[in-house]
Length: 112
Length: 117
Image 1 (cartoon, chains in turn brown, red):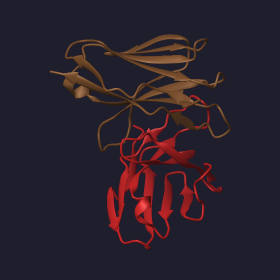
Image 2 (tube, chains in turn yellow, orange):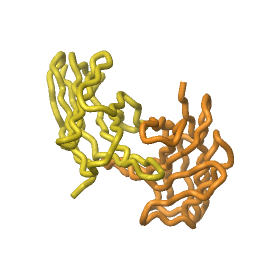
Image 3 (cartoon, chains in turn orange, cyan):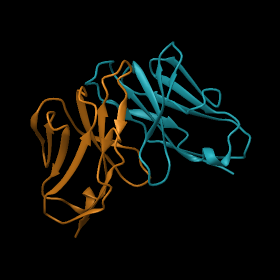
Image 4 (cartoon, chains in turn green, brown):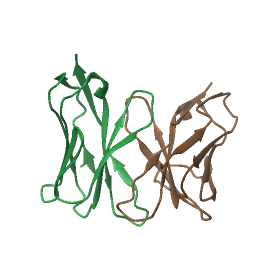
C-alpha cells in the first residue's frame, strides 16, 4: 500500500468551476499536511499547509483535513487556466527527520 | 521570505564526470535541507536529509558514495553526483526548513536539470 495516494488525473474542469483534489495517507500518526503546486519543468511551490481537522481557507484555496478518515483535500474555487498544473500532496511522517512523503500528484487542467 | 536558490539551474556533462549542485537558503538559516530527484512524469523521491555539521541520512536505495552531500553551514548544502552516468540524468531539487518540528514547511529551490551524455 502506497503511503500517500492521489489520483493521477488528469482532472479537467471548466474555467470558473471548483476543482476538488483528494489525497489519502496510510500513517495514522501523521501530523502535518501540505499542498504544493508544480508547473511542468519547475519545482514545487507551497499552496497551503494544514495541521488540524476541518477546513482552512486562503483566498481561492480551501484545504480540508479528516484525520479519522486519513484524508486531505484541496478545493480551488473559480478555477483559472493558470491553475493548470500538477498538485502534490505531502505528508509529514512525524519521524525523527520530519521528512515528507509525496503523493504522485494530480494533474489539473482548467479549460478556458 | 523563505527563499531557496540552487546553482546551476541546468548542467550537461559527459559520462564519468562529477557534478556539484549547490543549495542555499537566502534569507533564513536552514536547520535541515533535503535533496530530491524527480524523473519525468514521476513524483519527487527523497534522496537524503542533511543537517548542518553532521552526516546526511540517505534513503534506502540511494548510494551515499555516489551522491555526496555536504552541509557546510546553516545556509549551504551541496550535492555532488560522482562518476555520473546517463541514468543519473534527472531533475534534482533541494528544500530547506527553518526548524525541526513536524509542522515546519519545506521551501523548495528552483531545481537543477542534469543531463549526462
